[in-house]
Image (tube, rainbow, N blue to C red; front, side):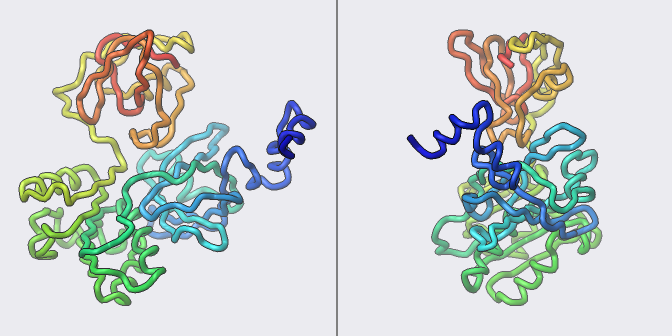
Length: 354
């Protein structure tokens, strides 16, 4: 019998893991955790948090994100943040960079109120917004606001192994002072001649138009492009790349789900949460995650934007509409499909096994 199995038989009903976490919360084998060791301000509303991870933490790929579980007023909230540190550090630390958003319970707490030694829960790194293993051609990054964070992780990792390759980087921010990690980006540009940083500050130049790429990066059509930022920017870039016949060059990371046009919204309907014995009426535009929470149902949730596949439930009956694409999914009591409640709305009466 394995040593851990023997220990488990002796500590029942608790597990050895339960005792280990009393000695050191980071020793949990079942649930990765992190300890906040430093909070470094980046701008007036953004900060980088350095976290000491549990032993055996799996290094991330630059550009990936991590789900972070934070206990606030007795309630655990999960949110998703990009990793901005070089992977596989010897000290076992990782960094996430967080921007406080209006009415953001978790982001405001992490930026302004979290204290050193606070323990947070962590999910393994995930995400496909990453660079190819081998970079053989010039690249283009287009970022705005906190959308710079996954690209910041990429740049730091590349710079850790030598001179940066041919990269043009267009970054948008309201003002120069609002550029997250602005000093780091400017130092990289000064040190690496092939990395060209183009800052666009709205207070001086107005809103950015993708047409400006022609002047800033004349060969942008030939460059594989990674873009992250607000939906209007990403939509405009998508239209421009599509119009130029180079849509396959554009790789996009969205921090918020794309919501289909209001005119395509379903009629809504009565939503029954069968496992919780709750029911309520819902419109055709509100995510079922929010509907359930407002009805007092304990809803599984993670990033709340359709990325992490944690906000899921079994659709036993009725139909739901994907708020990003407008597509409809119909339930089946015998073989219920799993839907993401954070990006699905009622398209008529709905039965969810939650």
